Length: 453
Image 1 (cartoon, rainbow, N blue to C red):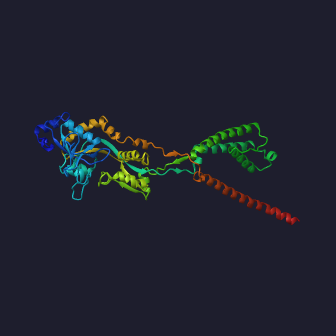
Image 2 (image 1 turned 30 degrees about the vertical axis):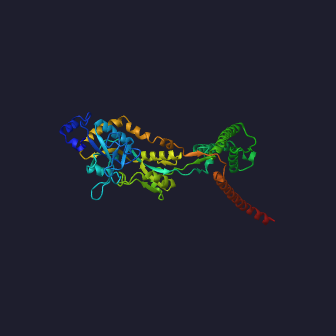
Image 3 (image 1 turned 60 degrees about the vertical axis):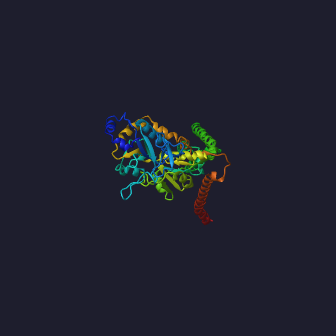
């Protein structure tokens, strides 16, 4: 009969070999290890097996729960691979067990622990796969192995519906080009004002201020491909005007060629990327997996996909979870729908290492650490982990702007009409001011003429 791990460690020869030869140590007569597990994809998942295919306690994965011997299950995933490698390397078999509450473990008011941490701390299980995030309270009752993987938390949000940008007619030119165009217009205008200074009475018969405004509007008309009324230009003036016409034509042709394509662009809003932005959205409800290292009160993880596909999909909820699990959920929904409806926020927070746990003071932690270190250094755990969420990369780089082939509607162009309306209102205001000022200037002259008569 295979001894339990506790019985095997009571053998002085085994204990001596374990302490002095951790690199080559193997249980000479084998050992039976009780491993606590719960499902937490993509790290580990539980799969029910038939009684005929069950090899109770054997290396290779199948096991039975202590709470219900009729519930037969095995494990798959990166942590299952880790457990099999440890079992083969150290020569032990294992029995899988789940805590009755299906939780990771949180401390209660009476100082007892729930979940897998409770099983290990009460010595009802020898190890727990997890992987667990290290916390100060947990380290007081169990020992952690070396880290298998470093992960952080992310905000998982539903993408908004494609929106039309009414100001897309400004997008063919970047803001820097618009500024450069305005600066060039002012520079050419100032240069032409200096060149025509002193010629107002002989050639234009207008005041200096009116002449300056006329020159400005003349250059602006050229930018809009309108006619130019400017008699008797000299050579240097023709050179300046010709350069401005050439530059204006290049800019306006580039603008018009890009405008129609940009009017077909739809923007997919992704408004939440940081905790600060989330806090500013008072109407948004946050969903967090309870009883984890983050909340100290964890519930079963199988409720997550349902919450993602219902509450979060509505747009008024967001999910806070580990980055890897967020990738898995996005990958799962992409395979079901073929669409990238969700995205991860850019901010990463609350990074933590993920480890296995053993009983407090157990000497096997050094054996496990040495073998886990080799797995991590060779990159095996990350390879196993990311091979389960490979489709998430498709959605990770999904564009935030899409193009559609449809006729232009008022929703595409109302920004232009707003700009046109504002210009007409400004023109009306200027016209009214001109009428009022003109009447005031003509009133004294009319009164003087009447007095003479």
